[in-house]
Image 1: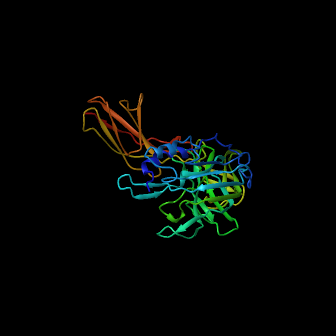
Image 2 (image 1 turned 90 degrees about the horizontal axis):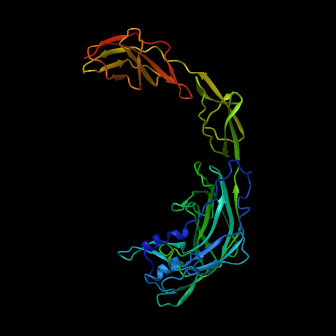
Image 3 (image 1 turned 180 degrees about the vertical axis):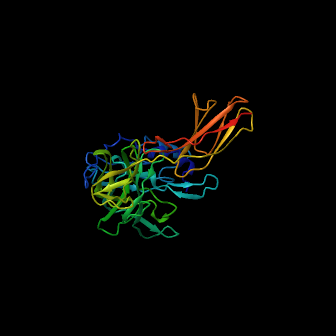
Length: 409
């Protein structure tokens, strides 16, 4: 049986691309909110029902492939389905796989030939959400022996669920705290069991995520390589009580001098990152909560007000010049004794012993090269060290070093 090549699966990946909505509001929705409110319907796709305008099927025919012989992925969401409850009628779970184009060896599963997709699910950056639903199946296929005789029914079917960031390959979001679903999104259904199975998982939207929405997708085609017996199944997949719930968050306000500098929303049981507050002439010691220095390794379990604790940024001690030498024409090298707890150094130089019209050069290194000096001139040099305050302003030593002179070559 001829099946489409891996290269063709890549070429048709555009079928899976989902649109994006605007960025979500910074104000968090209340915990327990079902963020699917306002969305109306899942959309279905299969190769043979051609919701993509026939792009996938026409590409298969061009290989050529024959419908019903080489591929047969076909199904759709039935009328009357909603965003929280839908039935997917599977006419044929298909035979689509990915093959090595040189050896024709089956190398990978490709269940994406039949999908149910929900677009534009609104989310907030950095927030946790719980996805939960009930799912059951009536999918079945004949199990046959080597001679083609029926020897029973195949009732087990694996499907893949994916929460993803739309675009750029539809990168999957990690599933955690899973129940009846693996962290990779695999769900095992057995139509011989009549009752529905409860599935749940938690997703975390990255803190730097800016699109404001995610997509959700069930891949319902055959896993031809991994679960070869599940080929060509038919029946229904029932999904009920599908919700995406915003998990608990706490509000953390960062305050300085009775003004709120920043507000962060932190998932329950997670840590809050510090806020890099800025104040001219001061260094941030840390933050206090109820008068006690706050430990940022603590897990947040309530709303917090964190108050900045400052200290005046201390000026560095007086720096010393180790030597000033001129070994090259029109140049001089100033070597400073390394000082502790400083960010850098400033060297002032002039042909005037009282430093009238002096020039200044700063460096983070203790060796500073002065250039474009006049040959034969006497140059006077002095230095200061500097540190920086929380606003990244330089705070210099209060006094210059003792001056030194050099005769320029």
